[in-house]
Structures are given as structure tokens and as C-alpha cells.
Length: 325
Image 1 (tube, rainbow, N blue to C red):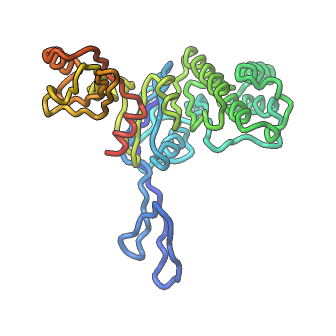
Image 2 (image 1 turned 30 degrees about the horizontal axis):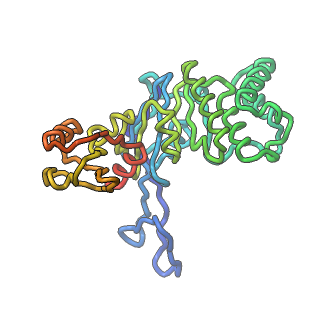
Image 3 (image 1 turned 90 degrees about the vertical axis):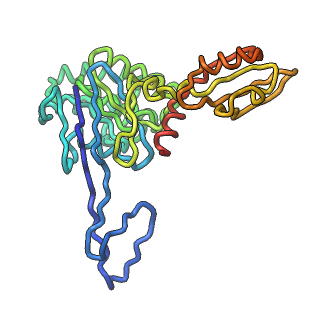
């Protein structure tokens, strides 16, 4: 188990002194309390999450929410101001982190180096023999569909193929945990399918995966759990079903023979309605504490119900709701 526990991280930037003649502009700059105090930007504010072996965790949030900072702390690239990174319940060591696979959002490959040489070199850095490194390199380049580009320089590849090679670099040493920052960025639909299949295979072999992405439909389809952060804090976590909770059944699509506003209690809200051949197709928002079954009974008692279907809430809907709070 990989755990990030109660992480806090701030970044400081010296404020311009009075009389310096400088003008600070731009969005997102925190104003100091006095002219001579440093500006403090809070990147993480008590963030916690866990990644179990054989599970995929989607890590989502708006730009600047703190996802990359948290990942870099997990890797040991940054140190937190407070909090800890644990592996199997104890503080993560350098030996533990050697069993991590990391894929940065900004590509971290040597552009002039040939693909196969680079992946094999990284495997050797992780302690593989030359024979083992070549075998693992061939395996992952083949799995990721870039074996034919083995002798090409990285800089000659398309962005999508560079992304595939970057994942091969993260996987070549058979890591226990994969920490992937926007791994699907720049991939076409076929590339997304290939990457998804490879991640599922790694998980089936026991790896734990956490990845960030703005492609929420993909996160919903691929992940066992989702963690949503805002301003460095976790605002929602769990399976998609758990995240939605009762909100996943707060809307109901109803087909009735008359306008449901005539007989629905005032606590219900008809948010969309259309009439076709004398039938009303409406989307009804349910009041708190009322589930779809209760709304269906109310319609049936009015003798007006032809069809009723609960509307499932997507991860995109959940994200918008919790991030906007």
C-alpha cells in the first residue's frame, strides 16, 4: 500500500520591496500581508490518499489544484512541509521508491537517444543485467506498439509515440506502484486503448496505479477509485458510485400523459420538459431525501405515469459539483 498522509506544501516567493519600481501582474499571485513579508502559496493543505496493489486510482482536479506537487512528493522529488509518504505502513525509503514507476507530464526522455537504448539504459539503472534489460525493453515496446521504432531517436517520434515510450520507461523495471501524471495526454483513441490495456495488465500483475487526467470519462471507465482535489485538499474520494451517493438518483426521466407540474408536489422541480404526440417527456429533479422510487410512486398514484428512468450522474457532473462548492 502506498499512502500519502496529511501532506502540506507551501511555496514562498519574495515580495518586491517598496521603491523597487516593479509592478506585479498576473492571476493567481497571492498578495503579501506587508511589503516585506514573503508571498506564500499553499499547494497542498492536508492532502491524503492511498493506492492499493492491484487497484487504479484516478487523481483529478482543476489546473493548479496540487496534483503534480503531490506526485513529486510521493516520488521524493519534493519534500513536504509536513505529512508523510508511507509504503506498507512505514515511511517510504529510497529502496521503496526504486520500485516506483514515474511518468511526468513533461516528457523526461533524452531526445537524441535511440528508443531501445534509452529504455534498456533505464532498466540497467534499476539493477537489471544487460540481458534482462534487453528482454524487458523488448517486451514493453512491443506491448505499447512501438517496437518498430526501437532504433529511432526519441525526437523523431510523434507526441503520441513519445508518450508510449515514456510509459515503457516507467514500466521497464516492473514497479510495485505507478505514478503517472497525465499519461493519456496527446494520445489518439487507439493510443488511449493501448495505454489502458497496458495499465490493466500491470494491475493484473499486482501493481498499484495512480494517474492524473482531465479526461473524466476515461477516468470513470478505467479507475477503481477516484480522488478529487481542490486547492490542495481532497474534496471527494471513493468509487464513482460512492462519490455520487444519493445524487446519482436525484434526477428522473419521466414519460407522462400530462404536464407533471400539475400533480407533482412543489418540492419537486421539472428542469426540462417537451411534448411529443400528447406525451410529456420531463426531467424531474428530486428534493433531498426523496429517491426515485418515491417519485415513481407519486406519479403512479396520480394515474399519469407511462415510464420512469433514474438518470445516472457522470463523474464529470460530480466533478463540477464538488469543485464548484
